Amino acid sequence: MFFSTIVSALLLAASANNCNASPINAQSLIVFSPRITYPKAGMTWSIGSTHNVTWDTSNIPREKKGSMGRILLGYNGTESENLDVEHPLATAFPIDHGRVSVTVPKHAKPRDDYFIVLFGDSGNMSPKFKIRKP
Ligand SMILES: *[C@@H]1O[C@H](CO)[C@@H](O)[C@H](O)[C@H]1NC(C)=O
Ligand SMILES: *[C@@H]1O[C@H](CO)[C@@H](O)[C@H](O)[C@H]1NC(C)=O
Image 1: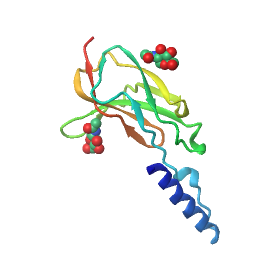
Image 2 (image 1 turned 60 degrees about the vertical axis):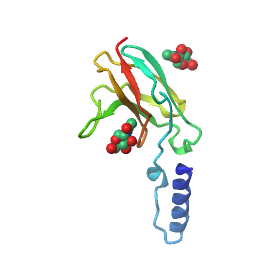
Image 3 (image 1 turned 180 degrees about the horizontal axis):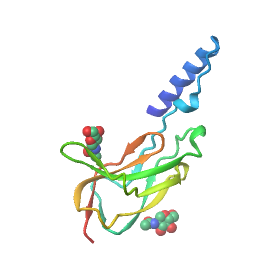
């Protein structure tokens, strides 16, 4: 799909480059962006509750198997994306596990348009879900 297209393009570029002896570090160019499979669109999380965020690991490139991830909570405000970088929901977990447990922070304000962003090398956004008082 999208990712494999990028890899194929990089591999082609790399092999093309071999002839003129200009080394290219394909590993640093691969951007892996896993698709989030949970939370689902429109679901509700209660403040203080715990959930397993999950993502598709089937197309993680071998070079990225050891990467650590980070999950942030956010919503799109009128002016900009509001990503709560001060309070990550999870940090330093292995991307290739495909799952990490997160707890909805006590300071989260109820809204209908939250999403999470899973960062490996680049960020991938979940669909929108709601956070409510318990
Ligand atoms: C998260 O997944 C683990 C392992 O499958 C399971 O033991 C745990 O109960 C799950 N937690 C939630 C909140 O679903
Ligand atoms: C939030 O805004 C960004 C950029 O404006 C957009 O790409 C993204 O799809 C929006 N996310 C949600 C969950 O609405």
